[in-house]
Figure 1 (cartoon, rainbow, N blue to C red):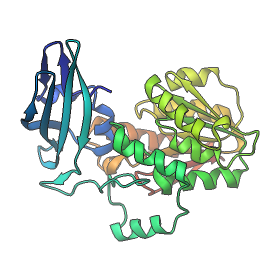
Figure 2 (figure 1 turned 90 degrees about the vertical axis):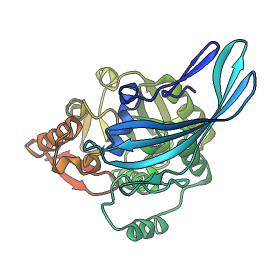
Figure 3 (figure 1 turned 180 degrees about the horizontal axis):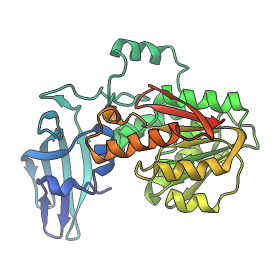
Length: 324
């Protein structure tokens, strides 16, 4: 896997340090963590050989007002194979607090705390009193948080448990998910479906979809999960309803379009669950474009006479929607 702030060329390594270099690759991570720009503060070779270099890279992240609130360190081992440099190993230390509180440290099955909606001791109490994950999902959560560049997108046991309850309460047989990632929530949902049930989950990145497929096949419910690769809106055009449950957790920009298309496919007694609707709290004072878009989505649903909805302050906000 390549990492966007290290460019590898035949014969040399280029580490990019300007904020512009982070614009495209880190857009999804910025959406989740609410940071505006990054910097590489120190790049230090730990040891070098003709065919291999070990680098220590210190980094910082900044809010829109320039406040540095998070920093950390990444260790790279970069290897030259037949004249081409490639990353052999990457290890990221736990983020360090600088001018503000860092996200909650990631542990297996837990998603770092992007916004403290309730006191941390209450969050921990809730985790301890939520049904624990089975071993295969503990391993998937560990892999996602430790190995995936956007591991913060993991749903986690509390939100995953909520989705399972929705699938059970609705007696769902057909589930649609927009945003598969490594397939954690798809497997949580599939576990509550009957043997002939199905989860159709959409993922835009083929490599990530292959990871999700591998882990799904290693679990007990892989036969219920179908992964569609491609833009979610294009996939939606090919589907026929009804779906008993729809979970929207894909790219935030087209949320209104996802909602409208999903409502057309929803069963009469079905439920749409939408993730990240509080967007790190930016919806209450939407100065950023992402905050404005999410605030517009919430307003769009609230003004729709066809539905009823409730917005739950679970993790980064989950909105449940049903037909009126």
